[in-house]
Image 1: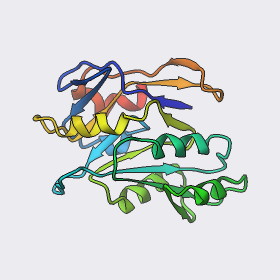
Image 2 (image 1 turned 60 degrees about the horizontal axis):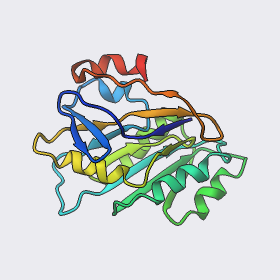
Image 3 (image 1 turned 90 degrees about the vertical axis):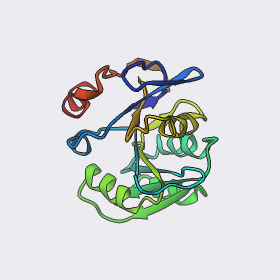
Length: 196
């Protein structure tokens, strides 16, 4: 389980917002292949609105014990508008019912070829200006994470990707360890899959 806290980065295009710091980086061609989790948000270029919209993609399969906290951590974000897309290929533990009952969720109850396929489907279906993914056993640490992300994307250096620090937590929500933070955006695309 992973909790994206958004705290404590200070590298290259970093930009502080309150107690949170989000780091921006220019797009790396290999990143789509290596991106692995909750702390990443992508800005879809060419679409500018008065207020940036956020789409979160969540792949889920038999994650009923964790899914309510995941759904709540997205639904309780202070930034609007947003959409939360959950992809479930056939859970039998009540996960689909949890997603269906959540007013903030659009459920895609359809087969997929695994987590990466579900995420790819979600990226294609997402309508937001900013797209992120959050695994079904992960949560955002605070209700202002999306505000911080949007503010970072709107900064003058206009990053293509924003990521923040996270912590690994157990099923009870207790801290296990901090997630690794890459301090050199130039190596993000090649090192991320080894270090997160």
